Length: 327
Ligand SMILES: [Zn+2]
Ligand SMILES: [Zn+2]
Image 1: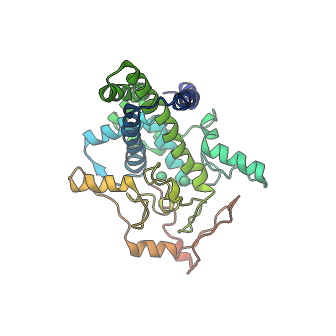
Image 2: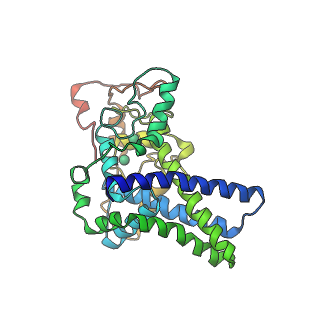
Image 3: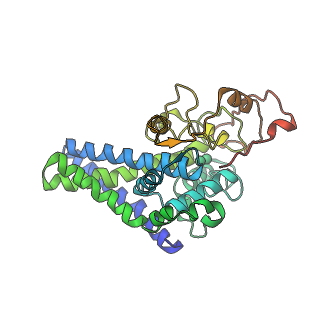
């Protein structure tokens, strides 16, 4: 998918699901909602959500675990169904985000416009949430940022056929709706709920990690960016919203590092590991977490909320080694 086609796609994928949400709200207002719609929505939300969080993000972008070719293909297809962009482009932007998070060159930092004030703050939030996708000038070269994936013919196939896979993700829930509801109408509303509404909710949950997750929330680790943890978004984002933990340990398969930090994606990886379907899962032990908590790094300074980094216990030059542990 070249730059211009990608741009047209972004425009469509931002507007069409929104129209779908309006249509679904009208149906709901008229009390037209069936079990088949709920099943189509939940089933597709799980497939696409795991595709993006476990597949695109933890497996492809950060190599947090290893798995077989069939599962890599499954995650590439499931991630594409998420409709957030082809695996190659998504991963290239994301690795770039980690390299220069909240600094010049970050594709979606809410802090690029450093003007003070609420208006500029809201502009930054919009840019980090969705606005950056409309920047025609913005390109992250996959050959530069993810040569490993650019060499992978399965990932290239999924990326080249991305638009078809998005379409599959809209038609498939129609059949789920039909299987449960047994009426032609259940096919159509299955596509509406499991396709368009699901894309809208799933994408905004991911976008919120980039926007809200760099402005509001708590910081356990003093990372050299403004990443924050937001527990309220953990379910919808499959654990991606423990974003400060993630920036501290980008390669960790688990983002919810404490037992009470729900991370559905990490649970799935653990189950797959127990079934011997994934291996070489990267985990960060408690000692390394404590060590990292003691490291202080300067940040750009929060805009709406004051930055609250972990209290610096030691600031020696040596403990800054390994701060930027990117991919
Ligand atoms: Zn981030
Ligand atoms: Zn990441």
